[in-house]
Length: 175
Image (cartoon, rainbow, N blue to C red; front, top):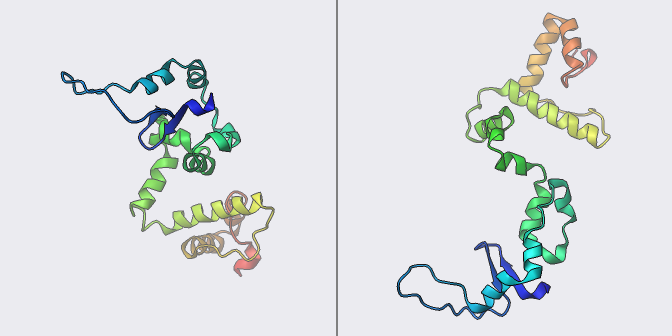
């Protein structure tokens, strides 16, 4: 049953494996009907069952059988798990987590080095925590590091408070 049709992911079509590409001409209309072999796929019981299966959740895409999926599409889904909601959800396009990267890519925020440094430091800190590595030998972005240094000069207490929530050097490292 698996060999009765083939998926064309480029053209978003399904063809019969027995299709010879011969399509009957219609003189009165612009639409061309599928060939007889491709029409049999539409009536195939197994094909109807496969088409009516629910779409797997994003977490389960990595378990899709390699034999039955297009390699290129499968790799894209595996690499981008979680991005599907951002791409397909209309409400997600209005969130700051989408607007900020778009602004960065279009060079809209080139003069906001402190905030960019904060984002970079936060991402690196979380990545290091995920891998079980500390913040030793981490080079903070210069503009962000200078900002935290100025906060420390004006109020070491404020620096200590911010350091509890944001990645920053210790008071001793700044001196």
